[in-house]
Image (cartoon, rainbow, N blue to C red; front, side, top):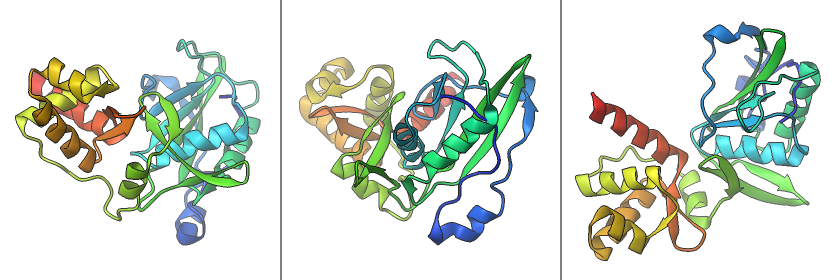
Length: 245
């Protein structure tokens, strides 16, 4: 997405106005030597230039409807840092995109100097309870992250977002944890593919998938196929780190 300089962060809207008005003007210049830029995925997206504002708003809302995320402007899809010509305009545009979200998510905007280049970072906080909606062609729509892309939310995802406590902190048995790892490595998969790849019965695969969906760790996409939610990717990463210790 295109870039600009920043002036202030986005507030959550009327329900969170006092918080939004305190700490949003946090745009600062930083050194890239102290900044970690994650690969694109459920919690990170790179844009060389900003697309239309409604498309930017979909990405902001999808991060807010998950576990939060980072939008970097001035980085190509291949990961090449090209910077932005006018950071101030980028920040203004991102703020305008945030105004299309209801409620507006809290967002911290920063610019980072990388040699002679300037990159813009927008860090979006998760919103609970949700969902955060976006006005698209006069209608309110809800978007979520699916891997490194943004897509419309399914009804089951909307139900989970409306829970006040956010994603369930589930403890998974070994079979369900195996399916979690499988979906992290290769998805989306249908029930039969999960059963075959995990060497378990179709019924066992179904139970594991239902448990993951109920825990907000997996979601149904593309008609009876399953992929991890941002919460699922985060849990899978944590499990793999513990397993390597």
